[in-house]
Length: 441
Image (cartoon, rainbow, N blue to C red; front, side, top):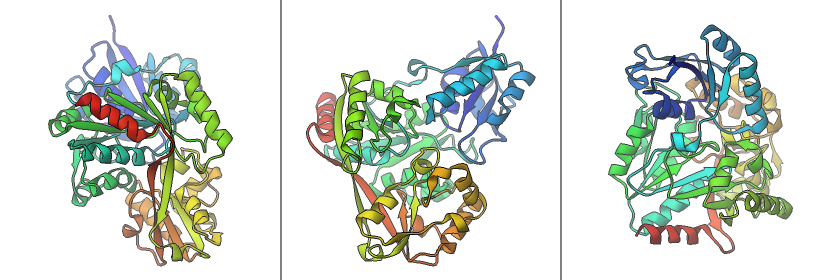
């Protein structure tokens, strides 16, 4: 039986995991290339031989998704395997149409082929879209487990934007580890808050090896998902976060709908700032497709370091990058904080944006005055800094999970916006975590 020739469509995360656990040692398949999209600067690389295994001594090329048809034609591809997240169902099927028209099958790998079994209990925190509040939910769960005396290790969804071989297994305990691993702003946003809580964080590329190390020092592993991807590890408690500020998206985005259908608990976050009818719609959609799930309402509680620097001021709102770019949100926590704490005016950064920041506004016209905290490279960080310094404002509101102001050289006052998950009416997420603790002993 001849090998099936496979092209994996990815974004430097799920694609590598699918390869590692299903294709790498499978003699039925020959992966001829990966493609890359969503994240700037991750194409035109190579999946290195050290990770690709003995069947791929020269590694595997990573090319732009835009070249899909050419790759299928030139490399005799039989199967195109879609392997990234936070895209509409319609966008997935456009890619399927392109693959089919070029002569290849189109495939989605199921959960049972890609989830790894752990030796310790696993809590998975996933979402229906990026920017729903996974990180604050993961912190909430980690705090409760620690208070119950459990040793908690967080395994974060992959963000390998640098040297893939060096990033195969990464362990973060201190801020110095972030420097050692040359973390981008996007990586820092996901790791730093856990480190501040004293939680060990793992991430990388090879999640089989990562699990071996993580479970050796943990009573419980928390899978802290990325975008709206499904978990890499089989969960004992599956939590999915939904967003009523984007009602209906829980049914129209891949693989967020999968997370909704498989969850044990669905947290409808931001319920205090969304319209009641939108919260109700998400509740009804959830009950329809997953009647066995417990639905809980959550509030994303906002605080700022210094209200006096916001009230009555002209402010620039700097938002979490993925949430307001491919996440589709026209605003984030900074805009809400500006409203809550009485800012007079929200400044518009578009007219002074430079380089890749200007290009980001052009690519995502829904952004409006929200400045996304893009920082996938040193050059992009510099362009973000230049853009902020060029904006006419009194205060910069940073609503990223990290202290972004400490990483940039800016010439105006900055205020950090923080947000944490808070329970509302019963049933609560806290109750479900207590039930989980009772179950695992």
